[in-house]
Length: 378
Image 1 (cartoon, helix red, strand yellow):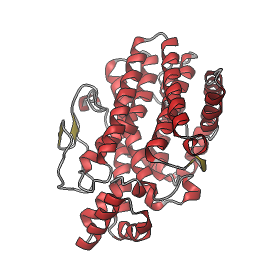
Image 2 (tube, rainbow, N blue to C red):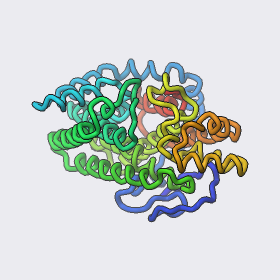
Image 3 (cartoon, rainbow, N blue to C red):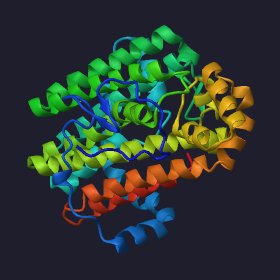
Image 4 (cartoon, rainbow, N blue to C red):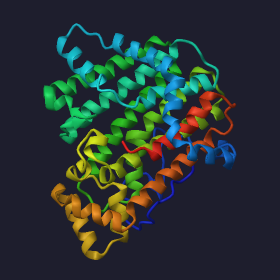
C-alpha cells in the first residue's frame, strides 16, 4: 500500500486508530484496495508540459467535449428529483439548480467513454453520484452551520435544518433506487461502500474540529474518506461498466482518489487565498468552524512560537475575526505554496495512474481535469 507523502514534515502525533505513518488500513478504507504494483509507468513529460501551458483552455475543451453527455445527465437528475411531496421538490431543485462543477458525474462519463462503454446506464449512474454528493452537501451545511454556498443562501438557511437533513435523506434513498435500476451488484457494492466511508469521514472530521494538534496524516485521512472516496467510486464505476479487468479498474479508482485529494487540498487553500465572490461561499469558513486544514498545519510547523500560539488559539475557538492576521502568517511562512505543491503532487499521481489508458479525447479530458483541479481559483 502506497503511503501519502507528508507535505509539511510534521512530527505531530497520529491519534486515529489504524494509521501507520500515512497509510490507512482496513478493508473499507479509501486506500484499502490500492496496489502500487498496478500503477502504470510515468506519463511522458512533454504531455504534462503541454497541459500545464494550456490550462486556460482546459475548461473550454472539457465543456465542449462533454456538453451533450452532461445535458443527458441533467435530464436524468431533473426527472429523478420528482416527488409528490412539494417541499422535497422545492429544496432538491433549489440546490441542484445552483449549478456546481459536476466533477463526479463527469468522471463516470469520461471513464465509461475512455474505456468504450456507450450504453445509457452511464447517465443513470452519473446522476446517482451527483445525488449522493448533493445529499452530503445538504447534511454538511447543517453540521457546519453554513449560510452561503455557490453564491447564494444554503438550503438550511432558507428552509431550516430539519427540512435540509430530511431532503438529504431523500436524495440518498433515491440514489439507491437508481443504483438498483442498473441491475449490477458490483455497482451497488461500490456505491454502498462509498456512502458508508463518506459517513465515517464526516465523523472523523467532527472529531478533528477545534484540535490544533492533529497530524497531517489525520488531515489526509479525512480527505480520503470524506471527499476523495466519491471521486474514486465515480471513476471506478466507469471501469466497472466497461467490464475492465481488476488492475485497470484499480488504476482508474486510484486516479479518482488522487484527483479528489488534490481537489480538496485546493479547496482548503482557497479558504485562505480566495474571495467570497469567486468562491461562492464565505472566506474563512474553515477557521470559523475550527477546521485544522493543511494551510494552518503548515503555517504552525514553520511559524514563530507566537504565530503558532495564535493559530492554535484560533482553531480551538473558531476565531474568524483574526482571519487577516492568520492569512498574513500563512502567506509569510510559505504555507500556501506548500499546500499548492501537495495538491500538485496528488494531481501528478492521478496522471500516472491512467497512462495505460488508450489515447482518446476522453483520456485527454481526464488529464486536463488534473490541471484544473490544482490551478482553479474557485
